[in-house]
Length: 187
Length: 187
DNA sequence: ACCTGAACACCGTTCAAGT
DNA sequence: ACCTGAACACCGTTCAAGT
Image (cartoon, rainbow over the protein chains, first blue to last red):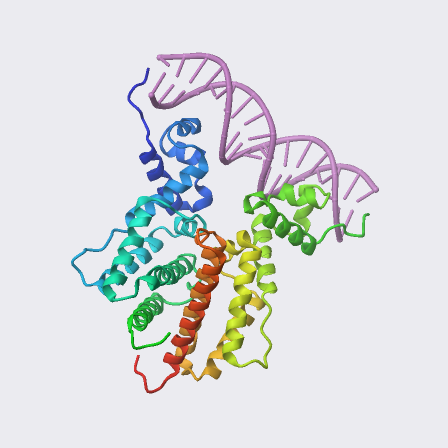
């Protein structure tokens, strides 16, 4: 009995992510992942339910990469740090990032990111009733930008233009938060 | 010589879109499309270069569905009408809409939509230098929201909440345009 | 417990052949 | 000109078998 396992869920996800980054999502097949691990395709099924489960695991990996920003920073810096982290992850793993938009994720990491945004918006002085909606608007805007850029929808623009666009987006989001927080300002 | 063609690119795309809407994107296989048209899979290759070309065609179909708003409306109504049209298309064809984010499209329809947004922003009084960037911010925000909703990222919220979120997004975008247009306001 | 070999139904795509 | 039949390499997944 070969008691010492040769592969694990972790090594499978690492191999799958590497293949996706190097050769694109279509190249992530059970056979290709197995080949990289020097194992038969059927060996994967002991550690992963099926291919869909493997792809879900890749998305989890991406979310785990986005580290929560340091808690001692002021709220607006925490938000911009998180936004830059998401954008960086998208450019590092463009193919898998596209999956993120089509698969709603419910892992602890994903909920943690959301919770940290809630905390920042609370500090910003938003009414509790406005917080969830504002969080949704912020994250769709950031996710939409990062996904579009990763998919190459802006590839005809120079990197400097895209950087400026992103900075502009963040400024604009900051205005939105301030505007929502300002009690003297009717919406 | 069977001179009268039984199928065409148009009938193939119609069949493919119907399959995607009814059974999801993975169900769109060459064999399934052919079966629906009562034809051999190999017959498709005379009208479509390959499967990738077929998928590109589905995205074109979606863009063609988003009709340009009536030109006599005021600019802000033209923008909100276009936004609602995009959202409606996303909910009608959620699976194919996800493709739109991962495949940059360069058809005449896509360029036409962009041009009409440029025209609206010109009327809104934006400086020419601000127009392309603002257009990019608007469309990523709208596209991001529509894609997230279509993918079910908000499915835990009632439709009324999502409608209100979308209305909120549009108001907010309107603020952004006014703010950018206001010459007395430094950015 | 973990991995393999053989097998199945399905996939995209090609090529030569039919009408 | 348009479609078909036969064929190929590849895919995800199953099951029984090996250690």
